[in-house]
Amino acid sequence: MAKDAKADNEARTGAETRAETGTEAVTETGAGTGAETGAEAGAKAPDFRLEAADGREYSLQDYAGKMVVLYFYPKDSTPGCTQEACDFRDYNGRLTAEGAVILGISPDSVKSHGKFADKHSLSFPLLSDPEHEVCQRYGVWQLKKMAGREYMGVVRTTFLIDGEGRIVREWRKVKVNGHVNEVLEAILAVKREQY
Image 1 (cartoon, rainbow, N blue to C red):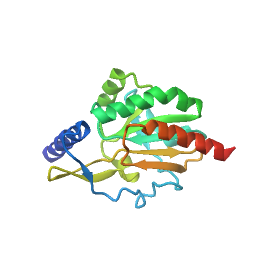
Image 2: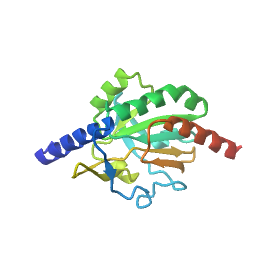
Image 3: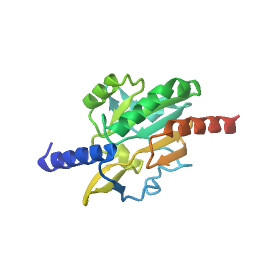
Image 4: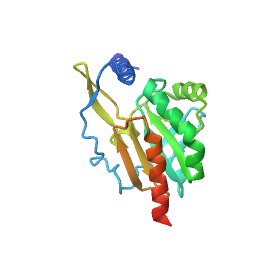
């Protein structure tokens, strides 16, 4: 890793950890709508192929015909990201019963994802996007500000994608508490509309 990239990653890591623990306020300065990327409700979800800790590559096309809960999070093992992952883990049976699968994406390495998933018994894939390509396509890689410093990072975001690959619901700048319940309610609403 180049020296500048390493320093940027260290700044992002420290800043996101402080933000997760609530020791400093973070402001996302990006537009946050996804309109510039096409990743918004009603649009076709951008496809991708990313590696997970199990060594497999996952693609949105792998889940044609199923609803996908695609959630982007800043960093493995930080308090907010851990709570969000564990909430999805705890609801995974219910979401699966309703015909949905969960995929998590962050810039962390597959090795980091493996440790994080093992430590918290996560039963769904965490995909590695170290070059931020998928994060950018979905409009979640944005400029953030904290304590007078600016850095690029992932804005916590969730997309609900239907079986035809369309984004039917999006949540930007997610607040973790109660979020998984909102996702479940949205899945149930989509199912009611379809039948």
